[in-house]
Length: 479
Ligand SMILES: [Zn+2]
Image 1 (cartoon, protein in one colour):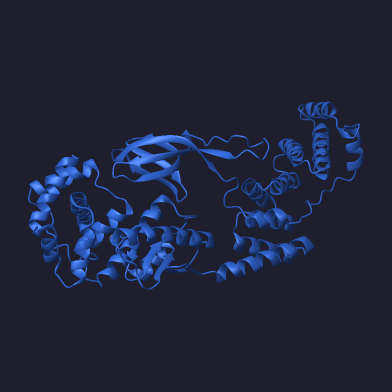
Image 2 (cartoon, protein in one colour):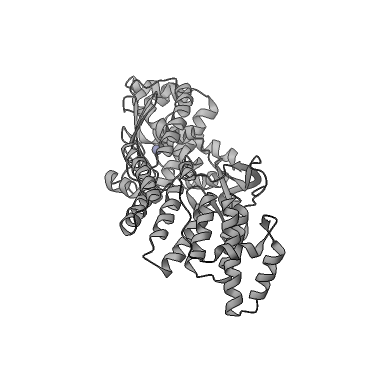
């Protein structure tokens, strides 16, 4: 399913001035959400796509429409720019008569492509001597171009040599090395894995694998590879690189906290420092929005903790349907996310709304109003299909009573939790569409000591039962 739409690369080999583009799609869901994705495929009633968080799919029934378009992406996203500065000598080659081989394919100081093509052609017979000669000639041409820093040409010759003997270690190492010099860390890593299968103990493989890991920002892996490679065969290039990677790793391990104007951020496990900075930036923007909407500014910095998924479950003991949690501190599982995805942005704004409401009402706001308002603020709106489901529930007199939805939902069954969220959102939509600002007035009255139903009565002149019936009227218009 993944391969049906490949990203289209434009200008990859043209001048570096032109930006790289990947086919990107915006998936508009019926609930008003948007998802930025690539490789979007409709199949078997599902829409499957790639996001920064991995491959995902949603039922086609929740998708409103999909807009395809090209958006620029940064080249070599996520790679470590320091890896390009590493000084590493190419793997040693044992060609003894390299100079004479090179002379036979040089003409006026450049590679004689015709002579080389003839040598390659005679190798096609499969005769051992001819094959060996072609490998030597292409390898010599590759080294020649490398010395002139013509990396693309060096890679082309290196790949041709490898084509003649696909499993040969020095040829694999040469092509991997050239990929590394070009900042192509993943292709290099693939070749090095193949090389390792043929010679598990080569220190050259460790040296280059460490470089690829370093380029891919896998600092701990790079340190492990280089340490092992140094034990096998000490190398001054590797010693320098290892020292640098070790230093970066120490910094990364220490960077476990961040601070901005309104937030204290903590994170555990594998969350990356770039993600933490991104999260703070997004939260500061949300802070402005929510303080305007609710006419309130929290007095204390808000604590936010980012977790890996497993750690989140272990520490919070939250039911599996809880995607994030706010118990005075915003707790968000972020495993595997390289940055703030649209999904995570929704979660952050949702949880931050809870923090505002908690503080504004001194913890007196009931669960249904908290969740309805948080979904409203994150930008969620009732979809047509959901409106129909909620209405038929109402018509069967099975709409949830708002008094039942007042206490904490942490023990709700997953199926009922879904209905509770959807109904609460619809109620807040009903309130805000009738008279924007009533939400804030209701919260003020709750803070002053009124029960929620009394705060509703004083603001909207409705009972809980009236409010449910007004919600049904609102939903009928959405259908
Ligand atoms: Zn919530």
